[in-house]
Structures are given as structure tokens and as C-alpha cells.
Image (cartoon, rainbow, N blue to C red; front, top):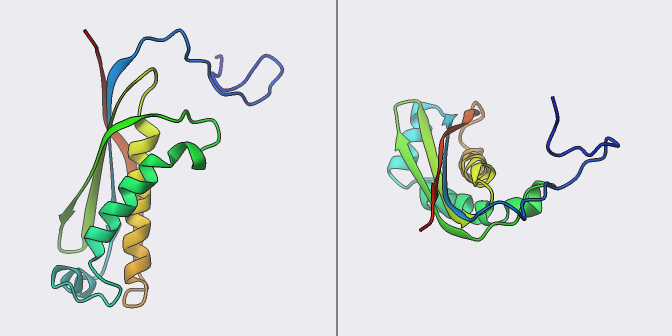
Length: 150
């Protein structure tokens, strides 16, 4: 098996995507953070002392997606068309879903995953004073697609 980020000498390299056509690319990632029910209720009532947890986590996720190539060494810098971060609150967890869209030569999977990860870490940071049992888990790529541009 040939690895795309390793050259013939075994050096880590950035993949050359010059010859690839521009396509509309979309990726969606999901993850979750497990919290105590009392913490969930504080978030619902906007009673976390650091502020609006989900609004802050949404902005953090979007900002992180835009900086993915600064964080992941061999990741291409992509002109993002859109990043959306959404939350579903359950009794014992918050499910995070991020979708990234770009028109480019390579996919936006890392941007979607980075958005979910950073949103989860932001929730963790904002709630750590009241919940010492939080767990970030199940971060995964849940879908991707590409479409030719006409």
C-alpha cells in the first residue's frame, strides 16, 4: 500500500493536488460530550458563569475549521464556503454536528472534524468548574461528497 503523505524516501510530504479539478466538496462530522444532567440543565437555562456555552462553542468550531491547516501540518489551506456547527441536547450528552463546504481540489473532512473537536473542547472548558466527569467521545466523519462544477 502506498501512502499519499510519504515520499519514496519515507519523508512526510504535502500531497500535490495541482492536477485535480475543482469540485464542490462537503464533509460532515459528529461527536459528543457526556455531561451530568445538572450540567445539561445549567446549559439549557444559560446559567454557566462563563456565558452562553453553545453559542461560544459554535463560534469556536467555525473558527477552528478556518484554521485547520495551521493545526494539521500536511493539511491544505482551503477556501471554505461554509461551516455550520449544530447541537442536539440529550439528557446526558450534547451531540455536535459540523458541516464544512468548499469549492476546491481536496476534501474538507479535516475541517469538519476540527470544528466538532474544538466545539466539544469549548463546552468542556466552559463547564469544567461545575462538572468534573465530562467525557468527549465518538468524534467521527459521518459523511462526505463531491460534485463536479459545471
